[in-house]
Length: 55
Image 1 (cartoon, rainbow, N blue to C red):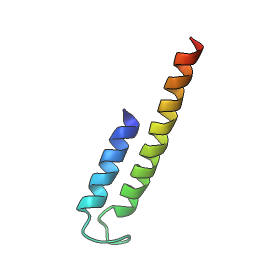
Image 2: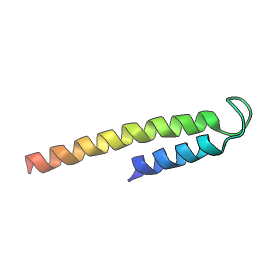
Image 3: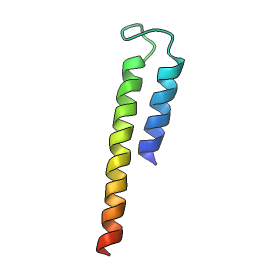
């Protein structure tokens, strides 16, 4: 769930930002949140599938 939240929050920041990097609208933070959300979702999915296989 945390990964999906990061994806949504990062996407919203990127969509609503009025300027590019360095303008103070948080676009760089949005990109980082989006990327980390994707990674967290992938790792969560992997852990879930491994836990179902082993026990």
